[in-house]
Amino acid sequence: MLSELITGRPNFMLLDEPTNHMDIKAKETLEAAFKAYTGTMLFVSHDRYFISQVADAILVFEEDRVMYYPFGYEHYLTHCKTQDTEELSALMEAENQALVAGLRAVPKPERHRLREINTEEAYIDWRLRLAAEPIEEARAEVDRQLLIWDEEKLNEAIDNWTYECLKWYDMYLEELKL
Image 1 (cartoon, helix red, strand yellow):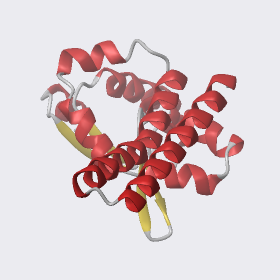
Image 2: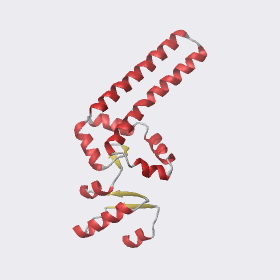
Image 3: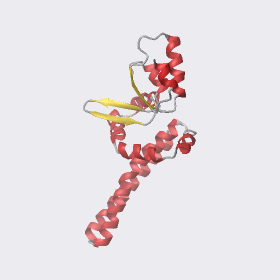
Image 4: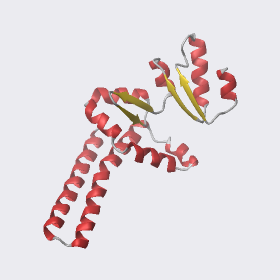
């Protein structure tokens, strides 16, 4: 049934434990088919090897929240070991909707070109883009205070903007060390 479904080329598939009760050869065949599939697939699986072979993004269900991680399972595991999981969870939760909207806005030919950079570079770019959002908010506040011209609030806004810029720069330097 699954073979017939895939050959029909649907643009979205929702699967629950697709590798249950399969032998190794069947799982390998399924992995190859799913890797070649060009639509969107959402699947639930406890087969970690299968997840690492097929998934290029994951949804993490943790307590009472769901977080989107736009990289593969192995990358997620690596960064969970090397980083504070609270920090990683906060990064994943931060502005997920804007990230997903931004990814949807990329034209399809560009999506294929974007895969030319490696996962680690894409991860660093993602972290830096998220960290840059407070800079834009602080800059917008400076613009608002310039219009009002309350010198005390303007100076506070400029200090905050400077602080956010320096915080981003520190993160940038830290990422370069990786």
